[in-house]
Length: 308
Image 1: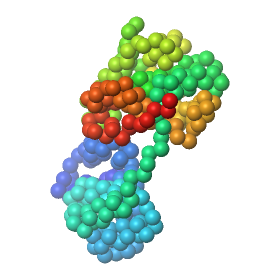
Image 2 (image 1 turned 120 degrees about the vertical axis):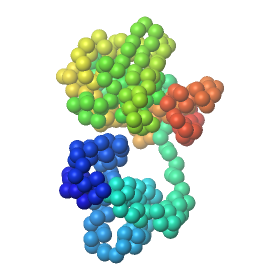
Image 3 (image 1 turned 30 degrees about the horizontal axis):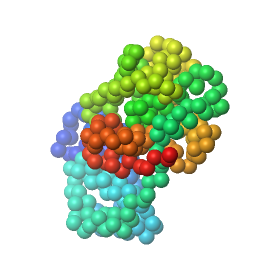
Image 4 (image 1 turned 90 degrees about the vertical axis):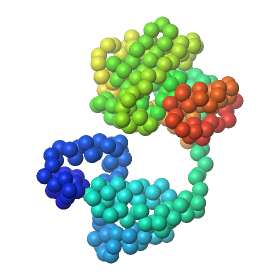
């Protein structure tokens, strides 16, 4: 094996440009790569301590996890990490053994999917959130910032990572240059998403509809306060980006202040609410899939009864 920061370059490409390892890393979403490397380190420690063949070790490790009550997702993640990095090393993949695959199948049957208790944020509830922002935010800019964030999250059925940054640095999420607006529409470019790992990009168009949660009005009011500086579209007065953590914290506080409770309201509630409200209005499946940019029928799990 080539000595490298990742330690995963197979012998058959020994002597090749080590910078290509970064391209291997980029073949996965950053969080997936991070998770795989974490699971792989655990796997290597277990193998060193236990000895035996890779298949024997994997069988034993899965048995330990089952007896400890681990969720099926944890087991599947471990197996996926071992499979990916083993193949990347050019070694025989122990997860391909039929019995290992049947273990995961049985695990899934023994632990059926839990009930998703997240509640939808439909237009009525989003209005209540926006109305409560004045009691939560410290100044007018923050009110306009979170009003724009909440309104866009619902109107565009955004995943949170498509809209805000992972940190205050604002290197990811929606950027100012990714937005276009006029008197009738707001358009946001999603450069990369869960279902678009290759970064083809997709424009989300939201129409003016008037009222307190009109995306066009909310964005225009916010931009007067924000200014035209490049960088993260949603940011505080001091220039730092609105982060995922901040979005979720203010959402919970605002939901509580609006009398919606906070335990069943999360960032995905906007996406659930958008799909549920569209279904309640009689939209066909194709329209709902386009609304949330779903590539499969997974959208059906998002449709919930609306809290009238």
